[in-house]
Length: 135
Image (cartoon, helix red, strand yellow):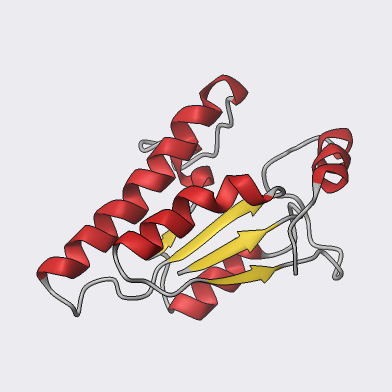
């Protein structure tokens, strides 16, 4: 299991998809905001808790499925913007419960990547200021 960290537009989703070889095993909160009919990304801050739960539930479902058939989902990528340690705790607990190894990767926007989700620059700076992930 991989946890992506920090910086919108840094390439977390792209990195996770390349690492996994497909998009199916990449779990991320952003997928909650994709309109199923149009495929358009429609972020709604009032639903962020639902998006977190959506991602956590998907990860746990994949992990449970791997108990039934060990060829299912042994590698899962979680490509979220984690700025604080506590935000990853649920994923560490799930990994321990279902016997997964966790690798965390800090992806930084050093290549001038574009924020695909329209998050205002001041909000991005607030997330950067909150960053406390320990190396």
